[in-house]
Length: 240
Image (cartoon, rainbow, N blue to C red; front, side, top):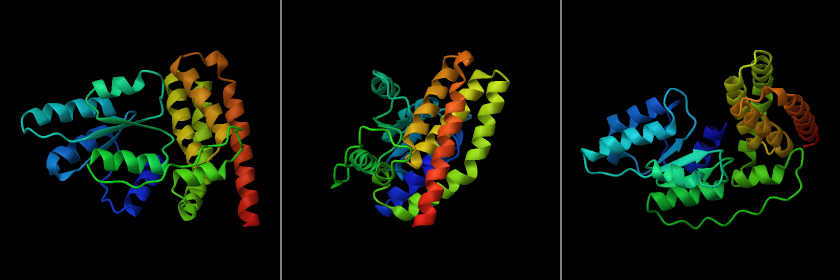
């Protein structure tokens, strides 16, 4: 869902976008087309087969032989202190935290590609965590209600499988699978502005990363909050 939002936001701004399902395919697309064919690359740090850091290192090695430099922007949900510097040290030029806000995305892309930007600063998110913060979700989508509606429909269709993956990972005591499943759910929740459920999924992702499945009862909180999100969305769809 994050990729769909990013592509839609950039295309509305007039940018041409090429996507890749994983880091290895991204590297192949960039090297085959030629580094000069792209103005900037958005590189998700957590990608299957080859992660964003490895793909960036490979691109930088390739550049040594051709004398070019492709601006690469890291995208990651891990916004911990010192994380930005680690991404930059790995050869990335800038850093974008998820959930991605449209204004931040456009500003960083146009800064990296050398284009002028007049993107207004987005409104600050209210401090209170709502079940569904529609205003924050729209702010990240540059006010695109139609796209938000599409993301809500995708969320409602995909969530049961995501929750099943989390329950299966917890039952199997597979901490890495818990982390990956919670990370995927977290991105979907962020896309629809589900702030409370997002925080629950984030905690569960941390549990998986720290391999402390004794605390995995947080999965029940994710399930409960996700149910509230669906209920709230259904009520709003009927009221609209």
